[in-house]
Length: 357
Image (cartoon, rainbow, N blue to C red; front, side, top):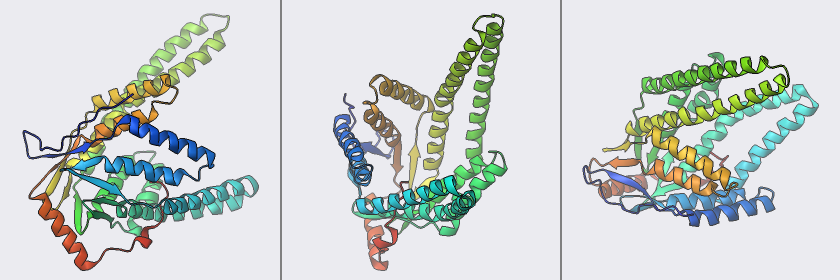
Protein backbone atom coordinates (compact mmCIF):
# COMPACT_ATOMS: atom_id res chain seq x y z
CA UNK A 1 0.00 0.00 0.00
CA UNK A 2 1.46 3.28 -1.05
CA UNK A 3 0.19 6.82 -1.20
CA UNK A 4 1.57 8.93 -4.00
CA UNK A 5 1.84 12.57 -3.02
CA UNK A 6 2.76 15.54 -5.13
CA UNK A 7 6.05 17.23 -4.40
CA UNK A 8 5.57 20.36 -6.46
CA UNK A 9 6.26 23.64 -4.69
CA UNK A 10 5.45 25.88 -7.65
CA UNK A 11 2.96 28.69 -7.39
CA UNK A 12 -0.60 28.15 -8.53
CA UNK A 13 -0.71 28.79 -12.28
CA UNK A 14 -3.83 30.93 -11.99
CA UNK A 15 -2.79 33.03 -8.98
CA UNK A 16 0.32 33.81 -7.00
CA UNK A 17 -0.79 31.40 -4.27
CA UNK A 18 1.88 29.28 -2.60
CA UNK A 19 0.35 25.85 -1.85
CA UNK A 20 1.23 23.79 1.19
CA UNK A 21 2.86 20.57 -0.07
CA UNK A 22 3.02 17.25 1.74
CA UNK A 23 5.57 14.75 0.41
CA UNK A 24 5.30 11.88 2.91
CA UNK A 25 4.73 8.33 1.67
CA UNK A 26 2.50 5.75 3.28
CA UNK A 27 5.09 2.95 3.39
CA UNK A 28 7.55 5.17 5.27
CA UNK A 29 4.98 6.23 7.82
CA UNK A 30 3.76 2.66 8.24
CA UNK A 31 7.22 1.65 9.45
CA UNK A 32 7.27 4.49 11.99
CA UNK A 33 3.74 3.68 13.14
CA UNK A 34 4.43 -0.04 13.55
CA UNK A 35 7.63 0.49 15.56
CA UNK A 36 5.96 3.17 17.70
CA UNK A 37 3.02 0.88 18.46
CA UNK A 38 5.21 -2.10 19.32
CA UNK A 39 7.59 -0.18 21.60
CA UNK A 40 4.73 1.68 23.30
CA UNK A 41 3.09 -1.65 24.18
CA UNK A 42 6.35 -3.25 25.34
CA UNK A 43 7.20 -0.27 27.58
CA UNK A 44 3.65 0.00 28.98
CA UNK A 45 3.18 3.43 27.38
CA UNK A 46 6.46 5.06 28.38
CA UNK A 47 7.74 5.10 24.79
CA UNK A 48 4.64 7.05 23.67
CA UNK A 49 6.52 10.33 24.23
CA UNK A 50 9.31 9.24 21.87
CA UNK A 51 6.67 7.90 19.47
CA UNK A 52 5.00 11.30 19.34
CA UNK A 53 8.30 13.04 18.53
CA UNK A 54 9.01 10.58 15.71
CA UNK A 55 5.49 11.08 14.34
CA UNK A 56 5.74 14.88 14.55
CA UNK A 57 9.15 14.84 12.85
CA UNK A 58 7.68 12.86 9.96
CA UNK A 59 4.69 15.12 9.38
CA UNK A 60 6.51 18.42 9.93
CA UNK A 61 9.54 17.59 7.81
CA UNK A 62 7.40 16.36 4.92
CA UNK A 63 5.26 19.53 4.96
CA UNK A 64 6.65 22.46 3.01
CA UNK A 65 5.72 25.94 1.85
CA UNK A 66 7.55 27.74 -0.96
CA UNK A 67 10.14 24.96 -1.06
CA UNK A 68 11.05 25.13 2.66
CA UNK A 69 9.98 22.44 5.15
CA UNK A 70 8.67 22.89 8.67
CA UNK A 71 10.40 21.28 11.65
CA UNK A 72 9.54 20.06 15.14
CA UNK A 73 11.91 20.43 18.10
CA UNK A 74 9.98 18.90 21.00
CA UNK A 75 11.93 16.78 23.50
CA UNK A 76 10.51 13.37 24.49
CA UNK A 77 11.31 13.87 28.18
CA UNK A 78 9.25 17.08 28.28
CA UNK A 79 6.33 15.27 26.69
CA UNK A 80 6.75 12.33 29.08
CA UNK A 81 6.76 14.73 32.03
CA UNK A 82 3.46 16.27 30.93
CA UNK A 83 1.84 12.91 30.29
CA UNK A 84 3.04 11.56 33.63
CA UNK A 85 1.52 14.57 35.37
CA UNK A 86 -1.79 14.08 33.56
CA UNK A 87 -1.76 10.33 34.38
CA UNK A 88 -1.08 10.91 38.08
CA UNK A 89 -3.89 13.46 38.27
CA UNK A 90 -6.29 11.05 36.59
CA UNK A 91 -5.27 8.17 38.87
CA UNK A 92 -5.70 10.35 41.94
CA UNK A 93 -9.27 11.04 40.87
CA UNK A 94 -10.00 7.38 40.06
CA UNK A 95 -8.68 6.10 43.40
CA UNK A 96 -10.48 8.75 45.41
CA UNK A 97 -13.72 8.11 43.49
CA UNK A 98 -13.66 4.46 44.59
CA UNK A 99 -12.88 5.23 48.24
CA UNK A 100 -14.03 8.70 49.32
CA UNK A 101 -16.64 10.51 47.18
CA UNK A 102 -16.02 13.80 49.00
CA UNK A 103 -12.29 13.58 48.33
CA UNK A 104 -13.07 12.68 44.71
CA UNK A 105 -15.18 15.81 44.38
CA UNK A 106 -12.36 17.94 45.77
CA UNK A 107 -9.84 16.31 43.40
CA UNK A 108 -12.22 16.87 40.49
CA UNK A 109 -12.51 20.57 41.30
CA UNK A 110 -8.72 20.83 41.52
CA UNK A 111 -8.38 19.10 38.15
CA UNK A 112 -10.84 21.49 36.54
CA UNK A 113 -8.98 24.45 38.05
CA UNK A 114 -5.57 23.25 36.84
CA UNK A 115 -6.50 21.91 33.39
CA UNK A 116 -6.80 25.29 31.57
CA UNK A 117 -3.32 26.22 32.79
CA UNK A 118 -1.93 22.90 31.58
CA UNK A 119 -3.59 23.28 28.18
CA UNK A 120 -2.17 26.80 27.90
CA UNK A 121 1.31 25.46 28.66
CA UNK A 122 0.79 22.71 26.10
CA UNK A 123 -0.08 25.25 23.39
CA UNK A 124 3.02 27.24 24.29
CA UNK A 125 5.09 24.05 24.06
CA UNK A 126 3.68 23.07 20.67
CA UNK A 127 4.21 26.47 19.05
CA UNK A 128 7.63 27.09 20.61
CA UNK A 129 8.84 23.75 19.24
CA UNK A 130 7.54 24.36 15.72
CA UNK A 131 9.66 26.22 13.18
CA UNK A 132 9.79 27.29 9.55
CA UNK A 133 13.04 28.29 7.85
CA UNK A 134 14.78 28.06 11.20
CA UNK A 135 12.46 30.60 12.85
CA UNK A 136 10.21 29.36 15.65
CA UNK A 137 6.55 30.07 16.20
CA UNK A 138 5.32 31.61 19.45
CA UNK A 139 2.06 31.32 21.36
CA UNK A 140 1.08 34.53 23.18
CA UNK A 141 -2.36 33.67 24.49
CA UNK A 142 -2.96 34.67 28.10
CA UNK A 143 -3.70 32.29 30.96
CA UNK A 144 -6.84 34.26 31.89
CA UNK A 145 -8.18 33.76 28.37
CA UNK A 146 -7.33 30.06 28.64
CA UNK A 147 -9.63 29.78 31.66
CA UNK A 148 -12.43 31.41 29.68
CA UNK A 149 -11.95 29.08 26.69
CA UNK A 150 -11.25 25.81 28.50
CA UNK A 151 -13.40 26.23 31.62
CA UNK A 152 -15.87 29.10 31.42
CA UNK A 153 -17.33 28.40 27.97
CA UNK A 154 -17.61 24.60 28.49
CA UNK A 155 -19.69 25.33 31.61
CA UNK A 156 -21.81 27.70 29.50
CA UNK A 157 -22.36 24.88 27.00
CA UNK A 158 -23.77 22.71 29.78
CA UNK A 159 -26.01 25.50 31.07
CA UNK A 160 -27.28 26.36 27.58
CA UNK A 161 -27.90 22.68 26.72
CA UNK A 162 -25.38 22.84 23.86
CA UNK A 163 -26.53 26.10 22.28
CA UNK A 164 -23.25 27.81 23.19
CA UNK A 165 -21.12 25.14 21.49
CA UNK A 166 -20.50 27.24 18.32
CA UNK A 167 -19.50 30.14 20.57
CA UNK A 168 -16.89 27.89 22.20
CA UNK A 169 -15.58 26.68 18.82
CA UNK A 170 -15.18 30.29 17.68
CA UNK A 171 -13.41 31.32 20.89
CA UNK A 172 -11.13 28.26 20.76
CA UNK A 173 -10.05 28.87 17.15
CA UNK A 174 -9.46 32.57 17.72
CA UNK A 175 -7.45 31.77 20.85
CA UNK A 176 -5.34 29.12 19.10
CA UNK A 177 -4.68 30.93 15.84
CA UNK A 178 -5.06 34.59 16.76
CA UNK A 179 -2.68 34.26 19.71
CA UNK A 180 0.11 32.72 17.64
CA UNK A 181 3.06 34.45 16.03
CA UNK A 182 5.87 33.66 13.62
CA UNK A 183 8.90 35.18 15.27
CA UNK A 184 7.67 38.63 16.18
CA UNK A 185 5.01 38.77 13.44
CA UNK A 186 1.57 38.04 14.87
CA UNK A 187 -1.20 36.09 13.18
CA UNK A 188 -4.52 37.89 12.84
CA UNK A 189 -7.66 35.73 12.96
CA UNK A 190 -10.74 37.45 11.55
CA UNK A 191 -13.00 34.45 12.08
CA UNK A 192 -16.67 35.40 12.01
CA UNK A 193 -18.76 34.19 14.94
CA UNK A 194 -21.85 34.34 12.70
CA UNK A 195 -20.15 32.05 10.16
CA UNK A 196 -19.45 29.42 12.81
CA UNK A 197 -23.06 29.57 13.97
CA UNK A 198 -24.26 29.17 10.37
CA UNK A 199 -22.08 26.08 9.95
CA UNK A 200 -23.47 24.42 13.06
CA UNK A 201 -27.03 25.53 12.25
CA UNK A 202 -26.89 23.72 8.91
CA UNK A 203 -25.23 20.73 10.59
CA UNK A 204 -27.99 20.72 13.21
CA UNK A 205 -30.71 20.74 10.54
CA UNK A 206 -29.05 17.81 8.75
CA UNK A 207 -28.64 15.94 12.05
CA UNK A 208 -32.32 16.45 12.88
CA UNK A 209 -33.28 15.22 9.40
CA UNK A 210 -31.17 12.09 9.79
CA UNK A 211 -32.61 11.50 13.26
CA UNK A 212 -36.19 11.87 12.03
CA UNK A 213 -35.59 9.55 9.09
CA UNK A 214 -33.98 6.96 11.37
CA UNK A 215 -36.84 7.26 13.87
CA UNK A 216 -39.40 6.78 11.09
CA UNK A 217 -37.67 3.66 9.80
CA UNK A 218 -37.30 2.39 13.33
CA UNK A 219 -40.98 2.94 14.08
CA UNK A 220 -42.06 1.10 10.95
CA UNK A 221 -39.73 -1.79 11.76
CA UNK A 222 -40.89 -2.04 15.37
CA UNK A 223 -44.56 -1.97 14.31
CA UNK A 224 -43.96 -4.78 11.83
CA UNK A 225 -42.04 -6.85 14.38
CA UNK A 226 -44.66 -6.44 17.09
CA UNK A 227 -47.29 -7.70 14.68
CA UNK A 228 -45.55 -11.08 14.82
CA UNK A 229 -45.74 -13.04 18.04
CA UNK A 230 -42.75 -15.37 18.02
CA UNK A 231 -39.37 -13.74 18.65
CA UNK A 232 -40.76 -10.22 18.48
CA UNK A 233 -38.68 -8.88 21.37
CA UNK A 234 -35.42 -10.20 19.93
CA UNK A 235 -36.15 -8.69 16.54
CA UNK A 236 -37.01 -5.34 18.10
CA UNK A 237 -33.77 -5.22 20.10
CA UNK A 238 -31.75 -6.22 17.05
CA UNK A 239 -33.47 -3.57 14.99
CA UNK A 240 -32.87 -0.92 17.65
CA UNK A 241 -29.16 -1.69 17.70
CA UNK A 242 -28.93 -1.69 13.91
CA UNK A 243 -30.76 1.61 13.60
CA UNK A 244 -28.54 3.19 16.24
CA UNK A 245 -25.45 2.11 14.30
CA UNK A 246 -27.00 3.36 11.06
CA UNK A 247 -27.79 6.74 12.61
CA UNK A 248 -24.26 7.09 13.99
CA UNK A 249 -22.75 6.12 10.65
CA UNK A 250 -24.98 8.60 8.81
CA UNK A 251 -24.02 11.37 11.23
CA UNK A 252 -20.34 10.62 10.72
CA UNK A 253 -20.64 10.81 6.94
CA UNK A 254 -23.20 13.59 6.56
CA UNK A 255 -22.42 15.96 9.42
CA UNK A 256 -18.86 15.58 10.71
CA UNK A 257 -17.00 16.02 7.37
CA UNK A 258 -19.20 18.98 6.46
CA UNK A 259 -18.48 20.70 9.77
CA UNK A 260 -14.74 19.93 9.66
CA UNK A 261 -14.40 21.25 6.10
CA UNK A 262 -16.40 24.43 6.67
CA UNK A 263 -14.67 25.25 9.96
CA UNK A 264 -11.19 24.76 8.47
CA UNK A 265 -12.08 26.96 5.50
CA UNK A 266 -13.57 29.65 7.72
CA UNK A 267 -10.53 29.72 10.01
CA UNK A 268 -7.83 29.79 7.33
CA UNK A 269 -9.68 32.14 4.99
CA UNK A 270 -9.85 34.65 7.84
CA UNK A 271 -6.20 34.22 8.86
CA UNK A 272 -3.36 36.57 7.96
CA UNK A 273 0.29 37.01 8.91
CA UNK A 274 1.51 40.53 8.28
CA UNK A 275 0.79 41.27 4.60
CA UNK A 276 0.21 37.60 3.79
CA UNK A 277 -3.17 35.89 3.76
CA UNK A 278 -4.23 32.25 3.59
CA UNK A 279 -6.79 30.25 1.65
CA UNK A 280 -8.41 26.88 2.37
CA UNK A 281 -10.61 24.98 -0.10
CA UNK A 282 -11.52 21.76 1.71
CA UNK A 283 -14.58 20.04 0.22
CA UNK A 284 -17.04 18.44 2.62
CA UNK A 285 -18.03 15.88 -0.01
CA UNK A 286 -14.41 14.90 -0.66
CA UNK A 287 -13.72 14.74 3.08
CA UNK A 288 -16.73 12.44 3.54
CA UNK A 289 -15.46 10.16 0.76
CA UNK A 290 -12.00 9.98 2.36
CA UNK A 291 -13.56 9.30 5.77
CA UNK A 292 -15.73 6.47 4.41
CA UNK A 293 -13.00 4.77 2.38
CA UNK A 294 -10.51 5.13 5.24
CA UNK A 295 -12.98 3.48 7.61
CA UNK A 296 -13.55 0.61 5.19
CA UNK A 297 -9.81 0.23 4.68
CA UNK A 298 -9.15 0.05 8.42
CA UNK A 299 -11.96 -2.48 8.95
CA UNK A 300 -11.02 -4.84 6.11
CA UNK A 301 -7.29 -4.65 6.87
CA UNK A 302 -7.93 -5.37 10.57
CA UNK A 303 -6.39 -2.04 11.52
CA UNK A 304 -3.24 -2.22 9.38
CA UNK A 305 -4.50 0.52 7.04
CA UNK A 306 -4.76 3.01 9.92
CA UNK A 307 -1.43 4.84 9.29
CA UNK A 308 -2.25 5.09 5.58
CA UNK A 309 -5.69 6.47 6.44
CA UNK A 310 -4.18 9.05 8.79
CA UNK A 311 -1.64 10.10 6.16
CA UNK A 312 -4.26 10.31 3.42
CA UNK A 313 -6.54 12.53 5.50
CA UNK A 314 -3.67 14.75 6.65
CA UNK A 315 -2.40 15.13 3.08
CA UNK A 316 -5.77 16.29 1.78
CA UNK A 317 -6.37 18.81 4.57
CA UNK A 318 -2.84 20.23 4.38
CA UNK A 319 -2.74 20.52 0.61
CA UNK A 320 -6.08 22.33 0.63
CA UNK A 321 -4.27 25.26 2.28
CA UNK A 322 -2.23 27.87 0.45
CA UNK A 323 -0.63 31.21 1.25
CA UNK A 324 -1.50 34.35 -0.70
CA UNK A 325 1.72 36.36 -0.34
CA UNK A 326 1.38 40.11 -0.02
CA UNK A 327 5.09 40.65 -0.67
CA UNK A 328 8.43 38.88 -0.86
CA UNK A 329 8.38 35.93 1.55
CA UNK A 330 12.18 35.85 1.97
CA UNK A 331 12.25 39.51 3.02
CA UNK A 332 9.39 38.94 5.44
CA UNK A 333 11.12 35.97 7.12
CA UNK A 334 14.38 37.91 7.36
CA UNK A 335 12.57 40.86 8.94
CA UNK A 336 10.72 38.66 11.46
CA UNK A 337 13.96 36.92 12.42
CA UNK A 338 15.92 40.14 12.82
CA UNK A 339 13.15 41.70 14.90
CA UNK A 340 13.05 38.65 17.13
CA UNK A 341 16.82 38.63 17.65
CA UNK A 342 16.75 42.28 18.67
CA UNK A 343 14.26 41.65 21.48
CA UNK A 344 15.22 38.16 22.56
CA UNK A 345 13.40 34.85 22.33
CA UNK A 346 11.51 33.35 25.25
CA UNK A 347 13.33 30.66 27.18
CA UNK A 348 12.44 27.11 26.19
CA UNK A 349 12.32 26.09 29.84
CA UNK A 350 9.15 28.16 30.23
CA UNK A 351 7.25 25.80 27.95
CA UNK A 352 8.56 22.37 28.85
CA UNK A 353 5.22 20.67 29.52
CA UNK A 354 3.11 18.98 26.89
CA UNK A 355 -0.09 17.15 27.88
CA UNK A 356 -0.84 15.90 24.40
CA UNK A 357 -2.65 18.65 22.51
